[in-house]
Length: 308
Image (cartoon, rainbow, N blue to C red; front, side, top):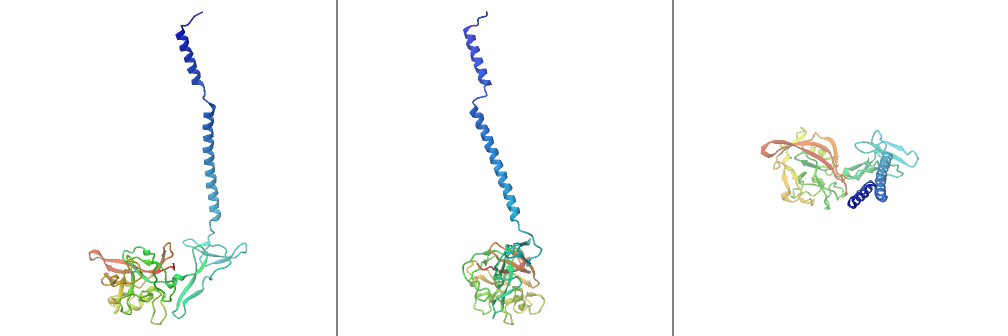
C-alpha cells in the first residue's frame, strides 16, 4: 500500500474541500432572493402594461363623437337632454344638457339704445353660451405681423360703451391700439375713441367691428385710409406701456410718426385665440416705413376681448 506524505495528504484534503465548495451551488436563500426579485420586477412590468391598456381603453371610451357641423343639435340617446355640435378645429357632440342659457342663432342686446348685440355661440365644450366678447372688438396694429400679445390688467376700461365687461386683458405695447381723440382732450377716454364695437357710427348705432368703424374715415371711398383722406392725420397709435388702461401723452403718437402710410379696409376672417379666451378675428394689412426706410407690411387685427 502506497503511503503519502502527511503534507501531500493535507494538500489533497484542501483541494478536495475547495473542489467541493466550487461545485456547491451556494445557499438556497440567495438563489431564492434573485428569483423573487425577478418575479417582482416581472409583476411590476405586467401591472404597468395593464394600467396602460386600461388608460387606453378609458381614453377610447371618453373620446367624443364627431359631428358634421357646428350649431347642430340632437336629443340624447337616453332622453336626458340635448346635445350640441361644437368645437374647433374638429367638431364633436357636447355633453347632454337639460338647461342652457341660449339657443344657437339667438341674438341678445348688450345695450338696446346703443345697438350693441351679442350672439349665442357653442363653445369648445359643446355648450351654447352668450358671446360677451362681441361687445369688445377694437383694432390693434401688429407691425411685425406677429400674433397679438395680451397682458393681464385689473384696471377698468369701458370698451363697449355700454358699461359692461370692464375687466379685460390688454394688448402689449408691441401691438398697440389704433385710436382717435374725438374730444381733443389729449386722452383716450373709452371704447368710443378706439375702432370697434364701441365706435358710434353716424347713424347713432355702434359698429359691428373695427373695420366698419374705420371705414367712416375713408373719404374718397377707395377702400383704404391714408393721407388722401381728410381725417387721416387724426388717427393715433396708443402704446400703453404699463397696461394701466390710462393713456398718457407720451403713449400717443400719430400714424405719420409711426411711419404708417395707409390701412386697407379689405378685411378677411381668420380666428386665433389665446388661453384666456381673447381672439383675433377680422384682419387686414397696413403699410409702414420700417428700419432703413424700407416699406413693410403689418397686420391690423380686430380683437375680441373676453370678460375676465
